[in-house]
Length: 498
Image (cartoon, rainbow, N blue to C red; front, side, top):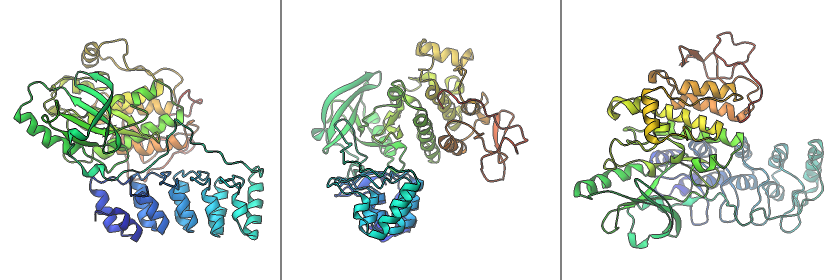
């Protein structure tokens, strides 16, 4: 059961499903040659396993040590159905491996005629040269060469040869499988940990860039007064619950080290090259990427809300969401507070729901409070501004809890995102939707970012009494011409951001 790669090669769907259900297993890990489980399932044509891995969040454009993606392997072995699934999930049809070969090169070389035609139909270029100056048509047999040439001309492709160019210059990163051994090592030997450079320091501790087991990591050194046996016991009980490897939008805590032998208790997590969403947002993002960030966060929160019991003392804000090398937003478990860390203190009140500022943690609905935090994140994505930046944390907490201070939605924003923010920021916690309700809405926003048609599904969902109400009909996009329930926002002009 431990060798997920063998299970994927053999197509053992039951064993793969059981393995994926364990939150400590990372479906995007790689073997000794950098093959991910999705690589092996695509290579061997295990369609049901591919479906499962994609549904659980397998990286579509991940590269092995030779820079082959799952699409390269499915194309070379002629698994047409799997090629179609990967393309549908936005696989890059023109990605090149270390030899400069695209998936179309492989399909032509191995005589996979139908796969080659499908690739060209979906954007694969017939004129890209590999390192040796050969295009896919140079690899194809004469009859396939003529078919591809005719199809490419009909699609308006330029048949002039495009010379090979290594697009991975210094400063960019490939999407690689993660180290498959890191999720097996919960305990950290402090002597094997190297602290390289301090990143930040705040009330709860210091943040360092470091190296562990040959991998770049982030090391969080916790500042705890009066380290006692009880705190040590709580630390050992709590940190293993944050080692959640099974969802692509959750960033797990890799491990921890007690004090002693470390001078202070420490936790470590993966190094994220782009830092936090807070940093990325305020450096600028395009509209499509912003919608994707919102969808990633909603998917991650929907998963965390299925856990029983829920992760305690987790606060959702842009500083606790990290951006991976492939620009995937991941909710960081290393930002979850331990029970002995300043109980009752709010570090980021701008993202906290009013009821959470007024009541004890046990008296609030955590899921509803998280939805409010998500609404503030949406506002931040739209405006690229820090909420209530001109106020101190004390002032923000008091004004949000007692004086009705709320983020102001600026003019020119998409009516769809405005409606979604209002739904998620309902003053009545009971009327806020759940994350699994808004994921389909965000998926449609991602497919249709300019908002030319209503994205709020109707009539299976209806805006009544200030809340999303589910009906028994299946989820689907509505049309402004058949919707008479009055629940859909009117399609407005093109928005400035979404």
